[in-house]
Length: 72
Image (cartoon, rainbow, N blue to C red; front, side, top):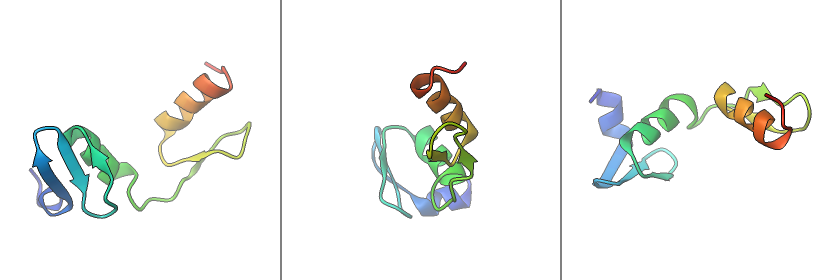
């Protein structure tokens, strides 16, 4: 595991991982690593063209468009 991950991730048990930066709890190491790399402390830069929603990741915006606005 890279050094930054060891310093930022708190492992409670096999299915509980906490981001040391913000305290969010995750059920897998993969999810907390994704959170650290792309979300934690980052600005929301992806603006929905149909509503005020902003997202930190493009894939989340695409899911929003599909699920909320029914755009594929």
